[in-house]
Image (cartoon, rainbow, N blue to C red; front, top):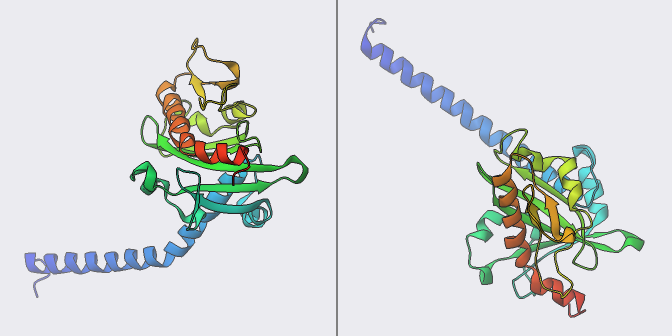
Length: 236
């Protein structure tokens, strides 16, 4: 075959494409279990971070098993339903009508401090999805801790939702008013007024991300109101 001809060039290029594709496919399949494992460990780290336990990946599983004593699913009526909480995909659940959603709850046991209830969240920032976890004290009103992450927010602006300096402001805030009405939290712009117990200062220059996070908190926590009320009334 003429190595300078078009036929040879075409065949050579086709063979190389097939070989490279086969190698990449094999690598992707081989690495998939490790990738899933890393995602699982990172999720456990994030859940722990919401109860103010920051641990390296190598310690996450052991401490998660020690601290997270229960994980279960509920529906919008506050009823426990079948399923495995950890494997729930919030993106999928958000695509369903509220009455069909399965809502994960994680319980962290702090002994004499009581149970902390961890609620997962998912919303939309400026450039893509944002997500996180909020931990509530046993009163199911006062925030014990929170952690947030994002897919593509702007460094130094919206991406600041991941920082300790932002997250620490949520501790001690409440999501119900004095009359017991769910009000969630205001992630406030400069000069925006709101009751101090329900207000967290937003990120300077990251208004859209801040308001996306505010909407995420309201939308997702509101799905748990029946559960919170029943728990507080000892009906569960």
